[in-house]
Image 1 (cartoon, rainbow, N blue to C red):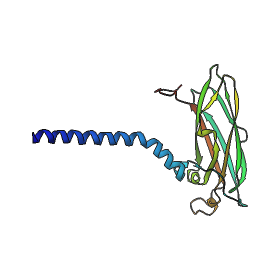
Image 2: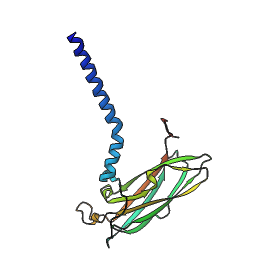
Image 3: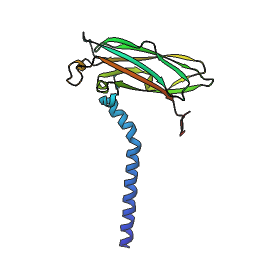
Image 4: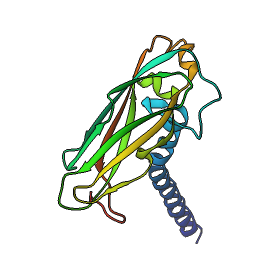
Length: 183
């Protein structure tokens, strides 16, 4: 009887360990994404509710890049390819998206910041990349990004030479709910 309970404990411990490992795997993507948004790690812009009061007299050039995945029949372009912004001052960039297909499509945009070390200093207040975008056939939409560049980028020893930042966005088909593949 004692051997049987030992085997049962081993099986139970193994099952519990397996459940913990599966849980960590499932939680790793959202936790990593949250980590990147909070720290700016890997060129991920931080998310802010609003810009800090006041702005710096220092300016920076911000470039905009837009692309779509091969299976996404949308035209997606920045309305302006670059702008000069004051550090700490809220700025608004506009993009246009157009569904070129004959069916309604929902897309999601990913983004990154180049150089990646500047990602921790780019704060997005509002961005189309935080939610799915649905376009009917032939429909066009104007998509805004409200952001600011943290003034401390100019005094941080790792980034004080950065004069240009590129914000890149890529649209891809959103996955259907309860689906394994793209829509």
